[in-house]
Amino acid sequence: MSTEVVIEKEPKSKHKSSIKTEDRFVYQDDEVIDKEFNWGQFRRLFSYMKPYSRQLLPKVLGVMIIATITKLTVPYLTSMAIDKAISPALSEPSLKLLYMITAAALILYIIQWAAGTYRIKYTNIIGQRVIYDLRADLFKHIQKLSFSFFDKRPAGSVLVRVTNDVNSLQDLFTNGVVNMLIDCIQLIGIVIILLLINWKLGLAVMLTVPVMFFISTKLRRTIRIAWQDVRAKNSRINSHLNESIQGIRVTQAFTQEQENMKYFDLMNMTSKRSWDKASAMNQTFGPLIEVTGGIGTFILFWYGAYLIQTGEVTIGLLVAFTNYVGNFWDPINRLGQMYNQLLVAMASSERIFEYMDEKPKVVDQPGAAELPQIKGDIQFENVVFEYEKNRPALKGINLQVEAGQSIALVGHTGSGKSTIINLLSRFYDITDGRITIDGYDIRDVTVQSLRSQIGIVLQDTFIFSGTIRDNIRFGRLDATDEEIEAVAKAVHAHDFIIHLPNGYDTEVEERGNALSMGQRQLLSFARALLADPRILILDEATASIDTETELKIQEALQVLLKGRTSFIVAHRLSTIRNANRIVVLDHGEIKEEGNHEQLLQKQGIYYGLIEAQFRFL
Image 1 (spheres, rainbow, N blue to C red):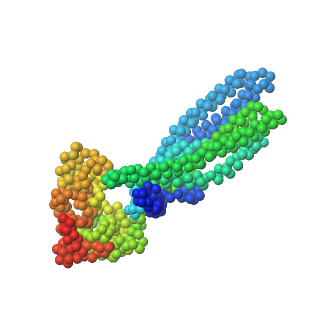
Image 2 (cartoon, one colour):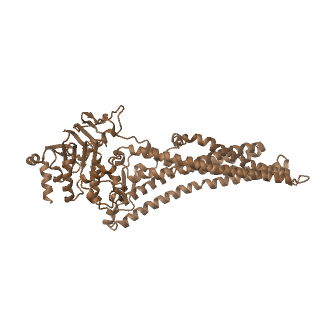
Image 3 (cartoon, rainbow, N blue to C red):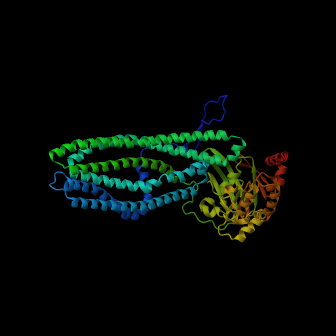
């Protein structure tokens, strides 16, 4: 599904801000899905319990049956106690028999308690394992999805699927499924016992069951849609929260805290109302069962009294019948609530499996080979690429790069610079044409073997929570401490690292907020160089570095780029002037090629870019 944001604004008022807190952001990715209960999805969800069937059946099912039998035996013992031990109709009450029945009932209660404790222990274990497997599968699948998937979805929406939606299934797997089986077994047992005691009275009591099911089925579709709506609104809250936290500096810089709080309060209130509506629908099952049970109880006493007068049943059997009927309506009520819980789970599972069914756009072709150690000869042959259909970002790019050459890509914003390096790394697949490395079409080799030989340094450097050493080692996990320090020295990061509180073992905050932009960029240089790639890509890698630091990096790059094929996307003259070749792009086409001096002599697009840069110095 698309995640296009549709913004519906009220007409502007001269007395109000043009930014409305009432604007409704509808993420198509999170829209309410109005369709029937999907039994195929139901089976798919519960297939996660299959690996634990050997644990579930003998251990849990066995104690469930024992607990049900003991529970259903107690009312019969009660009828025996009345009819055989204390009934006024008896010539002499039997206290001995009463004590024996009481002792038997006590033993049955103890067995029932032990079986319940054992069941809860193992169902919790199995339920948590199922949730672990489901969350792990979802996260692994998301890791494989292509850039195009994340381009269209807010980070908060993805986060909700892995956390909230999976967590909402936890109670279903730990308690819901087993309780549903217990209630079904109990219902079957009660129906059999009622019919055995007196089939006429049993059928009379159960006359209300079809009526109750007929009414409840009318509520199912409405309840299902209501819970889907709750999930969708919660997803939007998390998306907005994630965006607000990441953009807090911009919010405070423009003093938009109050407006942001108003909008969040509106979303929060909308979510609350959605939850209240769904919850209220859930509560309709309870009164429905109570009313139906009350009618059934009335029938029981009215018809039961008649049968006592005719001598078809005894007082003890009527008391037992009353207990069984009470036990009959309880599981009916729980099954109704269970169905509601299942609707909640289906709303979440729809969203989970929507992501699980999302296919990566970039995958290994059947029979894809491992890319051997490369030299770095690269060729773009009439490459065409479209992010969206009929809107080409690249239009027939032809570019040949020899191993060891450094190529600078320059041009206005949107000219296609970053697109070229994204295609080279196969973050996207080309629409038409061919890209080869050492003669290998990059679509014919495995993605892992391709990217393992390409190092990338981005302008927006991402620093993970952890130590400085761990962040550099991310480039090659088996690197030694000595190798980490060597690459840090090569990019002049060592000097600032050793002055941190714990040197290389200093813990950095999420996204490296405790470090300056330049320091984070130096760490990303060290990380990329530690991987020792044959192809090195620098995407505006020096944009956030001060002049003094940039001079140090330029010195390091002269040595580090030697023998490697490199692509440099930059606007700074100092970064691109030493490249072997400069490629000038405009609207997805190569307009000029050559070195710095050659392009200046042409006085074309490149000359205009350099002139504009000096004009603003």
